[in-house]
Amino acid sequence: MAGHLPAELAVRKNATVSAGHFHETLPGAKSTQSLLYIRRRGRMITKVHHINILVRDLQLAVSRYQAAFAIEHFEYGDLPERGVKTARFRAGESWIVLLEPIDAEGVPARHLAEHGEGLFLLSLGVDSMDKSRSHINSSGGGVIDASERLGLEGWKVLDLDPNTFSGAVLQLTED
Image (cartoon, rainbow, N blue to C red; front, side, top):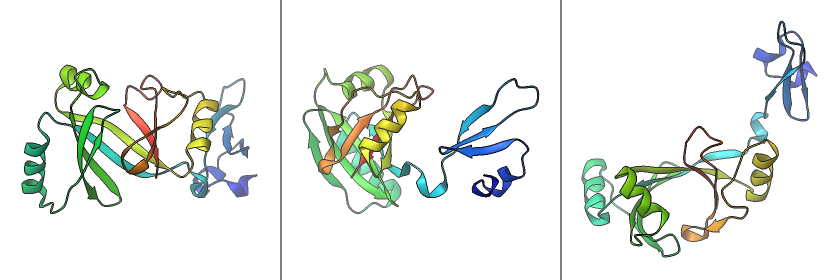
């Protein structure tokens, strides 16, 4: 089994890989301690898909970002079911999405009222929403809703439970 481990782990005593998990019996431990080990080619997260930033005034924010970062092109969209209008631009493979709440009762508006402008959430890209949801649920992670919703451009989006991820507001996105 050691041949399946990265070099830095293969030299460790009492280490094995089984069902995609790295197992090591630690000194003084009464049982094997298991750490999730996902081989590089089999990882679930493919990239940072997008970062959502809440703003009070979308046009003012667009002007500031254009001036500060020499951004020539923004794409605009509305998500009425989320109660926001958006402007986004590319930063490498990722999108930076500016959100202005238009529904005072929506989650983004409530977050803006409580925390002010700034980072709202980080969205992680995945190849398969079904496999990713299943993996997170089976590993003890949590999702907010059992099914995904549609985001901009028909993106499949699944919100993760912040209590599972150290308070971080995360979501998964499949293009």
